[in-house]
Image 1 (tube, rainbow, N blue to C red):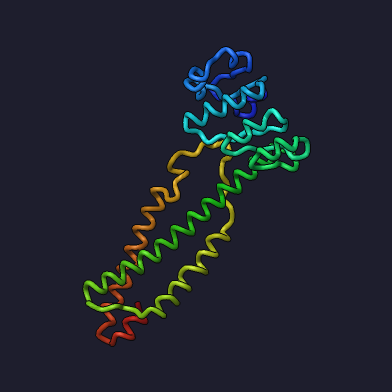
Image 2: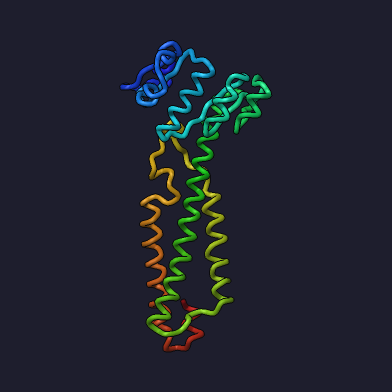
Length: 231
């Protein structure tokens, strides 16, 4: 009842107890592991079996524990979380993360912050690639159409300094967006660049290159220095 009220036990999923798990071999457990969302009354070695079955099915597994017997499961999981104030030294040594306040709400907050930071980094990388690819494409087009390098090395470095550092700082300081910690990320969410990011990079790069090349070509009749400045 508690798991259902918390949204852990969802429609179409079942509860697996330690007694039922003891009657299943590893192959049966791995085949049916996705149909269970709640595991109750487990022994320490059964936690390890569940972690191994989930990892074999391609899941990213995190587990909490505080006793010596939980050490194997904590070390085998992708992210082992030990209870700091009540956990044993063995459990803390085997874990990747130690919770000082023993509050599960801290795990949710940590996931929320981490996913928000990941999205901020993705936005910054999208902006950097858009501007840099646009500059590279503009230079290549100028070499092709006009047969000359449109801008010297020093001004180009200055342009990169201005167009990359300060805007990226504003993107990274934009704040952490709210995310759903219990939401299962798909491959698109985990990718460094989503389909939307790739489309954004492509469109912005083409626009930057097109405007720069057109501006350079229009002002080239006024002199190369003026054309390079306008570009």
